[in-house]
Structure formats: structure tokens, C-alpha cells
Length: 281
Image (cartoon, rainbow, N blue to C red; front, side, top):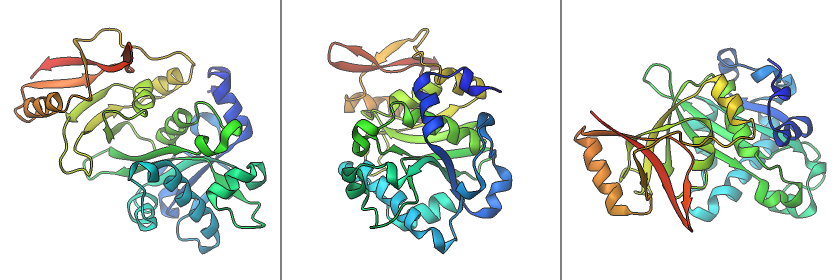
């Protein structure tokens, strides 16, 4: 499949200027697609999470997470990467050489003096679940904020599309906040069937749990440059309305309705709404 011929130029640029990597336990590699859409991951970019020689790369990956989620109170400790991501599942991303970073970006990353090796600029982490064939999407982030004018538009979407392909994910559970900008990315790839709309078990109760199904065709379409709009929907939902979230959760628990987000957010003035299908169970 000639992916480069069918995707938007901004994604082609990323694939030309960055290299894919995969960080996991070595025995997991045989389960994964190491040539996603015909783009091979170089052997030297297949990182073992039990290789002490890669400690600087591990530190930079951890720093990337802190730069992305520290500001919103959800940074991960390093052991979480290892226990919950690298060993049971994997971390896919794209990297560039440290020499390609600006001085400001090197300072943000806290790149060690003299280091000229690879620096991860995005990552997607997923964890296999006990239920047959299901995965849980744990983390998606990029360094575009600190890369400045050297950033890559579309990096997060490309990272997730390739990460899903590498890990061979069809059915994926996820958890995200209703006001998250990442909804644009998730919904560009597929619909999101809501399994919980209000989740007190999470640190942020206004979190939804969802399920999406991914296909190669859907991923390629997502990278075409054309926005994935909802063809039809039953209602526009305000995800900032906490009482509405609680009411929806009650209906989900009572098995009255199945709610599914069927397209990217829709703006009405300065207000953002989500297009939902509401099906009677």
C-alpha cells in the first residue's frame, strides 16, 4: 500500500523528516506490525525497555509526558511508563535528532550536554486488556508546543493512526475529558461509543470512557486532509454541562440508551458541542 501517495502533505512531511520508533519488551515485537502502511521501523529504533543503554531516551520520553500533561495535573511517574505501558503493551512515536532541536527546546527537554541521539517528539501508549482483543489507549501527546516553528502540524493524529496500526488494535477503549482538544483527533479516526459519561473512579470525574473500532481504511481516510464530519446525529451535546453528564451516566447504567459520538465537535458561536446518536437499548 502506497500510503505516501494518499495522505495529506503535512503527514508526508513528518514521515520524511522524522523516524518512527517503538519501545516495548522485546518478546512483544513478534505480535506487532513493524512496517505500518509500508513504512518500516528501523531495527535501531526498536527500543527494549530493559536496555539500560537507552536511559537518556527513556528520560526524554518521560520529560515529553511532563511537558504535555504536567500543566493539567496528569503527569506520569516513570514507573507507570514501565509497568503500564512498555512491558504489557508498547509506546509508539516519532523521533528526530537532538541536533534538530532549537536551544529553547533542548532546555525544555533538559537534553544532557553533548547528547546528539534521538529525541521523541510524540508518543502513543496503549495497554492490552484481559478481554479478548481489546486495548486501552493510555496516552497521546506531542512536543509541538516546545518545538515552536519547528513543530509538525498533524503530528498527534499521525502518531495515533500509526500507533494503532503497529500494535494491531481494532477495538480500543479509552478515557478522556469532555473538554479535551484531543477529541478532534480521536473522532477524526472513528466514532466513540460512550460507556461512561461521568466517571468518579477517575481523578477527573468529568471523564468519559469510550470504545472505538479502527480499520486501515478509516486511518487512511483520517489522514487525507479532509475533516470527518457527522453525516447525521440525534442531538448536539454540551460536554461542559455536569448535570447532563450525570443524567447520561444514569441512563447508561440503567441500560436505557447507547450514546455514540459520531463526528468531530461542532462549534456554535464560541460554544463547542458534540454530535451524538442516541439509540434505545
